[in-house]
Image 1: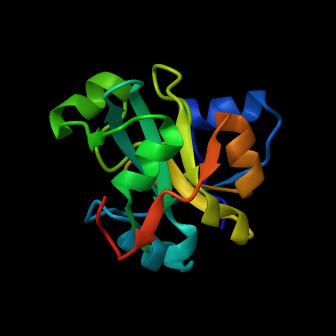
Image 2: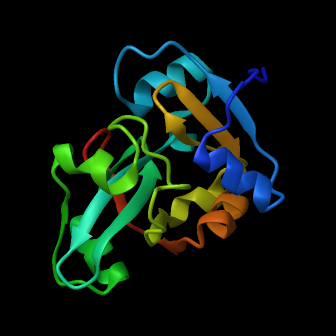
Length: 165
């Protein structure tokens, strides 16, 4: 099902400029979570990737993108990003830093080009579902295309355990 989108988000515009094909799906959102997106879009939770806004003590703010089946491994992300310690940014900072609302943070098209760390398990999937930059709107895209568009670093940053992060 390809939804008609009257206005393209910054994430969609970035993919268009890169010549990357994608599909947009919308749903009525009630919760802010990957689980709800997986159910409403009828796709496995392993293919729904959430984007978290993180800060490292050396590198500053960056984005971590991992499947809804995993929690963020702060230790693995710190190692991958060259930090000794990383932490989630405060919820009230998310919009100011990215231009996105919590629950609608896309790994693509933030108002500043932050480094992106994409969990390596992404490559095991035929496609990923990531936020299009609006709550209740997802982009379905090939993992390598997402990584290329966001100039993402692939690294094992997730650990088993749903939710979390």
